[in-house]
Image (tube, rainbow, N blue to C red; front, side):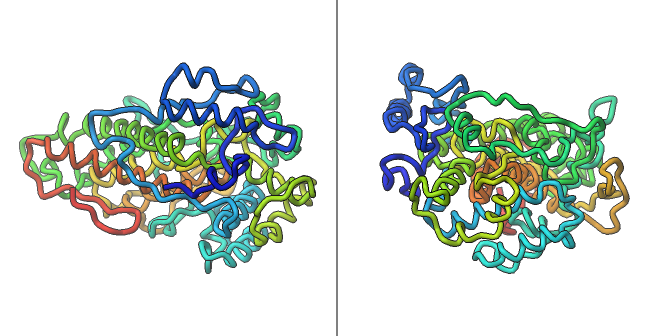
Length: 464
């Protein structure tokens, strides 16, 4: 099931087409798009090698939609609901959120409650069903109950990571504020046709903790697929056996400890496998099913529509949005400012790969560890993002893992390259991938246990 946009609009203006040849009006050359469809239908490397590209940038693994695997379920056997359609009010609401996210990139997360931009964002977004009643402090947070508890950034993105004989401080290169890309139409069109960006991101001299949307967006630009969940596993393991899941038999054993089963190697291997299988399932949906338009592409349709250079079926709630007017006042265009010079990667939007990996890996960790475990000595980032301060409250592992998944996924939204529905679908897809993987591996354990389970993002308990 798709949202029908590819069939509904035969010029393919409502579909993902970055990297292919484009016309001056920003729409893809229909013949080139048809060639891509042929290659995807045939699932043939040589056919895909013959498709026309507009520049030197390469499409990211379209043949990955056809990967087979012997463990867990087949990537194509997972169901993903269709995303909002191009002309829908739901799609309009998601783009309004992204315009506000771009405007708020340099606002510290800790200041959201009182910052005038964030107050204005919550006021406007609250008029849409998906954000009804939202408060400034809840902007750009994830869907689980745990996402609303405590600081915006998860403890697993701020605490030191035990890494063999050393410890890693989670301070990262911080882009200097105010850098926005692809706000000029000619620059946008060049990037859409596959031209390589000629500009670079400038960084502050000193690494900082993640404290703003821009810093988080840059982190999830450069991380590897399961990096933060490997770190989270190492942090949780450092807390000792009390942090293990209640059903783990080695938690109560007096004479044995887990290793290749329900021990350290098992945990770390499961995180990596979950990430891989989640990406396999995601690539099937991205290329073989949905081919959903990216935010930078739809925003260009809005730009040309409002400039009178084209006419598109855009919901009026988007064209009248205060966020859009503020963007135009700042950049003299209606394009969505990108946090990355290159904009989005060259693969379709739906569902989000980072989100699927996050959903799968967080679910695996919730199964291996006690979700109710109280994290010792929780921290909050200082105002200058140079230090960690004591957080005056309790935070539990399950909530912080859910929040970690949202941080990783929604950081890509704050960058301007994904939709909220990409994230929600990705998290749920990853969760289903993890369930299939865990149920299969649980059947192979020789130990008797009290049962392995975890809590879904929705709050529902799952017995494996």
